[in-house]
Length: 462
Ligand code: GLY
Ligand code: MN
Ligand code: MN
Image (cartoon, rainbow, N blue to C red; front, side, top):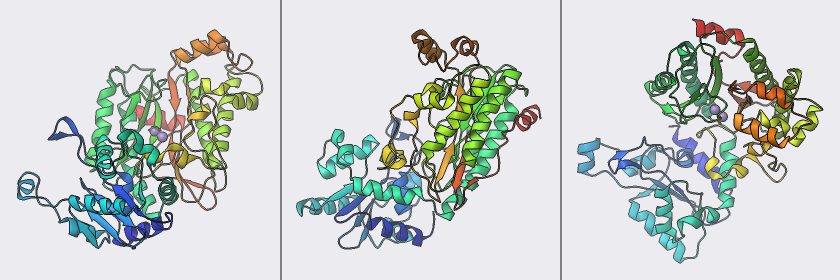
């Protein structure tokens, strides 16, 4: 948790984005896994954390634009709660710790909302993503859960996005602290990538590192020798020397700021010649994209730049052909790079995705492409100093996609299908780092996780 002044300042800034009425920001509650008292790992809502800072279940915050007051609602623990779960500060004490003068029980939340509704005041809320909060909003506002997303306040969403997009120095410090743990997760995965080891042994070990640092993973670990499946959460395979293993993993420590890195590792410690060739193209794309980052550039143009590096590299190998700028504009590169270059990162690994990807990554100037592949780019708009984003190009040989497009002879002027089919079974390569947009350019965040071919081979062999 940051200082009381941080939360006061953030709420004061948020007030300016909304003309009138009440802003309602709901925290999260515990969610049952298989019965009521056996719950999933608790994760507080990131907007609530950002503006109210309290990492505890069952809280809600209200910012009254018209009278200038902030309120915190939640129920104090009972003696029964204390017996089972230990003592807790009072809600009023929690409120005071984040500069909120007015607090009341959860019944108070119903009361203030009911009074505001009776007075015909506007109640601004964010799109809910959990069933529990959809039900709560239904009870508070009488809006059917299926209609809540459409009724969410665009004014408020835009205000939250404007604030959370530009990271404060103290937020960047938290991200970099978490990257120390991410470094240990990824270098441990490299050392464990040996013949005969099962993927789940490595996934378990690196998730344990996040837990042992007092945190958790920032998203379910993607770790597989079938890296051609972009978000592969199956960890059941036994590794063999010569396999390529993708590890896309991150952590969040007590502050809840995320990390998100991907490395591609040769099992046993030696890339084959063919693996080196593809790996080096992805690394070149990643490095060139990072070097292009500066305020004022659109991330969409940097995505295209990375796609061109990938296209030109594949042309050198005979997999693609023709004019690569035209190929990228048409979307032919997406056969091998079918996702976006990256996304914002902060309190969420895909930062603010609950608020709507287009509100976060696009604006009136830069619109999302409708072409397969580029359409999946989560961040396209102009970069500003203080943005934290991921850069994560990849090359994948996805058998089902190659077979489908080959059957249709799709983009036959840009893709050499005979050559592409030779790579079926190759898997995939992705390399991902977390980058801060600075006043003059960029800074790759945190302790560098090895990514050069020689460096990665050396660690695996060590
Ligand atoms: N961790 C998933 C991603 O890189 O977007
Ligand atoms: Mn990732
Ligand atoms: Mn990512």
